[in-house]
Image (tube, rainbow, N blue to C red):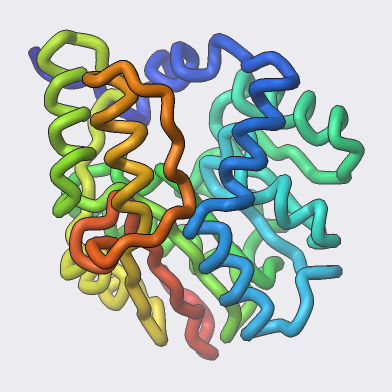
Length: 258
């Protein structure tokens, strides 16, 4: 069966149909807070800026804003951009409930409003650019640069093609017709680095994290029915077959023509 285009509105309307109850949403936020991804993001931002307070950040394809809510709670001025009104509605509920401010913008990753161009200190995305194919994969990285001031930070999180537990889980759900996210093409470290440089990202660094989280979420929970959560646990295999790749880099000093 041919997978649906992941940038088709109906795919994401289905994904964002159901909102978790408040207790479950708090669990999801706390899980992100203890993740290796957040640890790397926090460390990188503090190393670059010294503080998160007052930073202007934008999360592209934000969904509920898993990273943005943590940034906002540390004093960042966050903007969430998503093409799905349902996702933004869930994000608005989350931020209001936790009493942290944010701006919510419905829009296209590839066609940002002019007021966003060159306006931010940090551009982030998580689980977005793997839903594109061909040249659009490079273009989706370049889209992050358009909204950044020169010299500041880009952070992108994607699934890792070398993670066996993620690949098994995805193949199983796809075979059963249960895969909800349409087209999803995970990255290798080499492809992500190559496409980032082609897009114009400077100072490219790619790290792999969260192998044990994938073991618990993608193997033990669905197949062994064991309700364990190893998010944030380190493992010597993280760097080679961790489930998540993190791209860090910066926009160069020249005007972005991407």
